[in-house]
Image (cartoon, rainbow, N blue to C red; front, side, top):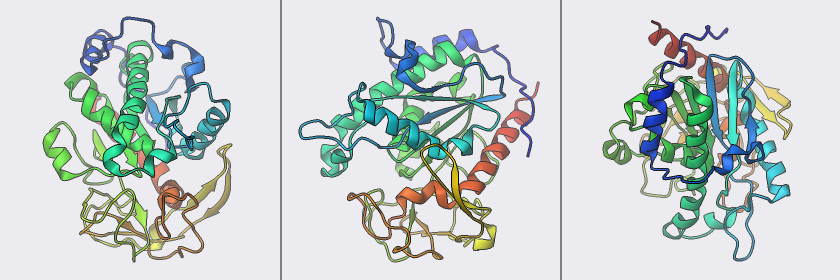
Length: 331
């Protein structure tokens, strides 16, 4: 599918500068993100109809008494780029790609009780917000924006939506927010009425989110027992329990840290939404074949495979939604 040509110009640039101040930056000194070294990706030269602002998942393990990634940790910075590359191919077709380094919370934070994590996640978010404000002030120039992330990056993208997209001028630039691998509740949508959850394949200005797990899982790190999250099925783009057969899966792609697809399996698995928990149930694979890898997850939590199981469907969907957005905003 071809992306349609850009129909928006930089006509909102002045308005954007004023609007972004509403994010509450309060910056009086030059931003850290004025330096290219603060960006894992800063693709500014490519002519494209839209931008992707992508927030990396957790790659920093943490150390004793160190719970946020130091920005000069070279090993973690390399892992940052690698983790981004694993998902970048879904989003960067005909789009400029922006992804900041940030002092993300370490895996050791997720070993804490949930009520103790927030100071470290808030520290991470302050960097993300600063990077987004700098991007809007200096690079956006009225471009439509696909906001995307995975895991902690999805959490950060939802925080950005709540904080910065309440402004109508900014919200109007949102193609969609792919907040995959984190939860978003109905209560949050009620508290932040500018947030909209996706209802189908091609609506725009919406949140796309799901969390994959085996059929027998009843509680997880992302969706603890007693929690219900919103979800959309990335195979049939329905939000109810309608199952999608594995024949609807265009291709699971397992990528490496260079972004290369090492293995592609069409029709790997179907999926359906558990209407009680909002989890995306994945019936056609075995937990033994797709282990959780990280100690913070248990068997049957397919969190690490959220993007990989549904790679081609997500890749196609970003194009569908961007074309729908461009059609809606034709002059």
